[in-house]
Length: 340
Image (tube, rainbow, N blue to C red):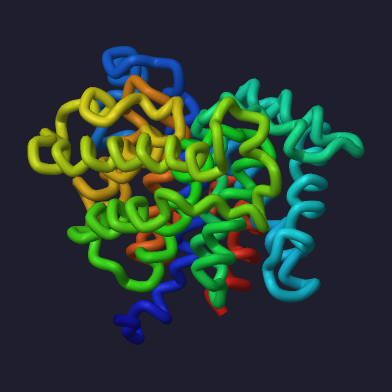
């Protein structure tokens, strides 16, 4: 049900700012285990935003996706013929940017280098990679108002596929955008995992050829349905583990021990959801929990912030944090555009 609170909470602004805050909070703790993080930062529930509050490639590439979507929508309804070129251009511009110095993933670097040319994008995609770089940047597709389910799902999978061609990367990106969308529309956190599991089941055999073209032929699968089923099945298994974890999780325990370290797409989705769903009304605690993990802490906290901000809106984040975040002006501009 859509309520007046849902409309006025500024979910897009809250999600984009939360994403960047989580990214910045997790930036100094990535590649550290929990004892090392506690030694560096003190008790995890009191972690503070670094000064300056720099972000990683996670926020940079989220902005690239957001700009591409804005460009495509300026041309008409969101469709692959309008979105593919802006995505490609934005990813190549990011690849060449002097600000691309935040320890980006190798899959993104290799794919974006190959996208810089005339070859079909499917030839640039890393068909064997399901790294979290596919879904840590997809939140804008859950925030843009007025999209159909087909547009949101197809665009989420397309932006993933340009770099990460593994079917699990596609399905996890689709699920991440769907989770963000549901939360912006007032979905209750308590029922979120069940809705995502149903969504995975309903889409298990749906290969979105209009958006993905012949991507599946670069794999070893016998059919497009067999290709995409692999991804949805892996995500469904991960969501099942998340369901179990939510019943047994101790907030003081590293969530990576229950749902994975987040280096791959389905684990990034479920571990970030675990952090968010343990503290649905305490967004800073959720961010701190995600940043104090032995896994891919910046990406986990980035996704956690996107979920928490979509749920609670712009008011979730302290002004003294939001005012210091890198790229804050552009994040606020995009958030205001989609909140309007």
